[in-house]
Length: 256
Image 1: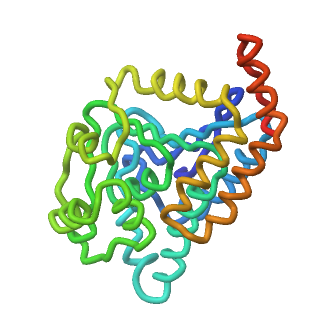
Image 2: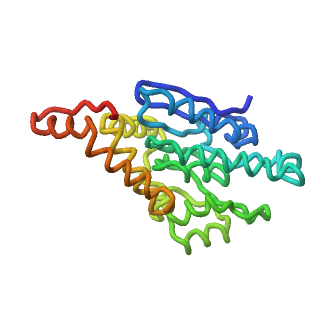
Image 3: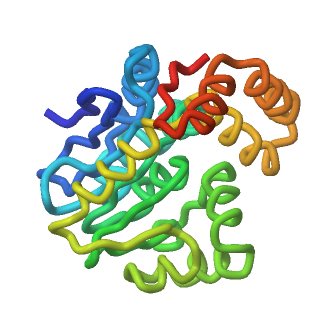
């Protein structure tokens, strides 16, 4: 049954796009399930980093399940479908923890939109990408488009949308769509090692960093980012970090 699954392993939570028989295409119900799944992981006080990945070995996400479009995305159903899609992306973007996308195989359309709403994207060699709404006569949603423009720039975003072409990891890395590329056999280990490294550092700093960086694209976050930065200086984690440096030991951060 297609769905969104969650897993926990110590400080790392995982959101899994689970529809492998259709290369992890996102159904409307799967989009609807993302906010609750994300909230479930965020509510766990032990989790400090979240990884988004596709189930199985074939694909991260082949996009939205186009077989649903005649019944779920045309006519009276279109608005509900779009709301579910946007709700999933907004839920990913609103996660107050670092979110890493581990990408293998196809990452297309709705799949690439899911990855765009993560903080960092790591791709396996052989992964492929496309932004293909022009093949269907769709307009790419504004929030996903904004994320794409932030990463690759306006002209490159237009080229990807105009051409709807498929491209590989070398181009994705050079244009800034992904931040690292690793052999497929090493993807899980690479992402988990990065997640563990992040999880050992100060969560209060990560919250301030995420809000401050995102505030450049969303002026509405500016006040929250400023408050988060002030919280850092008043925190026990800041005092612990300074003392650990002076004591020449690793700091133990509690997130407050």
